[in-house]
Image (cartoon, rainbow, N blue to C red; front, top):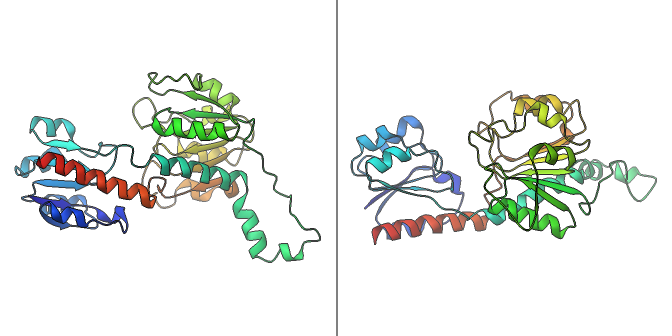
Length: 308
């Protein structure tokens, strides 16, 4: 079997040696759209994280038997075409749950604890000049007894909800699919969640129901001082609306995902005045060492199962 890995740079330094036990392996750190067809020539198995595989690619590569998506979402593969051509497509689910849950709280603590301000206060020498032993110029609040609203109660959303409850938060959720239900937590409509929550975290997929789910009008009705965290998909929050409202309203945003990744140059979020209420990370919530190891192990297992 010829196995082609198209974008291994996304796996960092994760060990890929197990692939070589399964066939003739060719590895590419990155692959552009223009390079894809040439690189998958004569491939039997393709491993892709974000490289798009189209119907045309499949048509021009009749040797393809299996496409392994090194992720949970499979929107970068034409699934209809693959089914018609009897090409199996396998993904890996659940590998990053704990990693994303952890990063959710990392982002929250950074924002509510004013971590950047206090770190710079000490390292700049300002604290050494202080007339008192502490600095209370940037007050922070406790999670206990606060209302935490979760948008998307899938596996990650439930995990965040349980940790939030362990901190003493009162958790409610809005189901974007209208299908998820839980006896553990209170289900509410979106408007109520936005109006009542002190913390809002998003753990939903991007689809026709969630695209621009939170625009300017929705953000406007949120409570004063709310923290909004998006660890679902870019596009669920209107980023232009965020750039506008963050300088008008006391609202903080933690964004791990953006509508275009990497973010476009001169993005409006880079020009907001109230930067201390904005924390952006480059889609890293899924990337813990353990999560990437689980991901590769899942891809290997998918290939082994196919070969059997």
